[in-house]
Figure: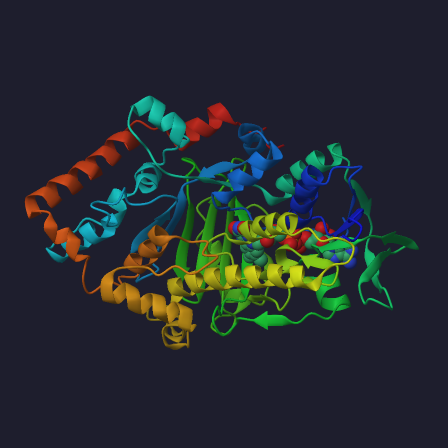
Length: 505
Ligand code: FAD
């Protein structure tokens, strides 16, 4: 006989992870199916960064029934077509990981093989010339693909994501969740009470003698990981040897027009700098490896490279790259920074919250908390982290920058799974994909080529096309992309017309 269903979910923490969990669970377990309580402490606050996303976010909004324009307006948001990488492969190099591919396959072969043949014959055009999101991004233009298709009458395949203010996003989801019956308890969690028989979490004890009991607990307490780490003693798989950046300085600056429809990532001697355009400000940060530079140097470098007036004081954030050895243990599931953090390079943390939540809903436990379900959740989640980890390492380990941190990244040991990918790519221009890959072939191609890691040969099927045919066909595709891009409105105009946020006081 099936065990009794979960009747009360307690979410510890009210940052992006906590409120995303509250919103999604309110959608799938609306009261009276289950009671959902979220505990957060205004005094402790949230991390306050995490403002760039990946296209999966649109699905999250879709499941919640959130209107995109309302969401972008409420969060001072903008749109994102990908990430521009400056100075990564070497100083002066620019490449772009766009949310799209390089066009449809030609005779069943991905077009980067055709590009490679032309490149080997001396054509200097970068692969990005065949990327629709890049064509729009480099012109600072944006409209959703359906609108682009309607206006231009030509097919435009790409995806997009968002930039938003993390504090406003949490507030937005709070309104959504509270309207659907989630109750919020303000207060500092002073202690976590364990059931002496099962070892499960029985209740959170808040300062002031309050006790919040529950069936399922979601740990969204950020880096402190109060439940999964401190109370249940689940260890942390430390990936510092693979992803050496361990600190960031963050500071906002004044908005600068045009609003770029992409995140910029600029490599620095001991890390990299982000630039995220929002409607009311620009988010900036310098992520760095403390073994190779000091906090003072890192701060000075960031402040010297803002493109608008500095707003507010720089904030230092420390982190250890890696993840919990178990994401789900007993009756606790960790999400967000409590689950792990792999550095913000490809904006994957919010995505991991989303996929973790989707998986939790899929594998929702009963009151017996069958450990086999937790173990499957942990297996899949660990794979997902490892695939993203490999993708992030590729950005570093094949750079040719001269500074000590970059030399270190070139010579450090990398996971076998990544070595295998690099070898296959170099041998024949293919990207072997494993299960739970977040990044598909075009993204890997963009980082390989951006770092000038070229395959030794292209697919022989390409030679079945005459050179004239190949050149003509590729030129046509490139021109079509440029033609469509020219008809897309400027991103700034699109945002100001479709989702203008209130002017900040
Ligand atoms: P937090 O925001 O830290 O929230 C923790 C919550 O727990 C807070 O409400 C706090 O009050 C509460 N809490 C903690 N202790 C207690 C207690 N004792 N009692 C009561 N409440 C408590 N992700 C992206 O997807 N894109 C990005 O561009 C990106 N950039 C980042 C840049 C940096 C430098 C860093 C460090 C992270 C970045 N991230 C990014 C990750 C992103 O910030 C997080 O994944 C996201 O904000 C979720 O955080 P969280 O909710 O897990 O933790």
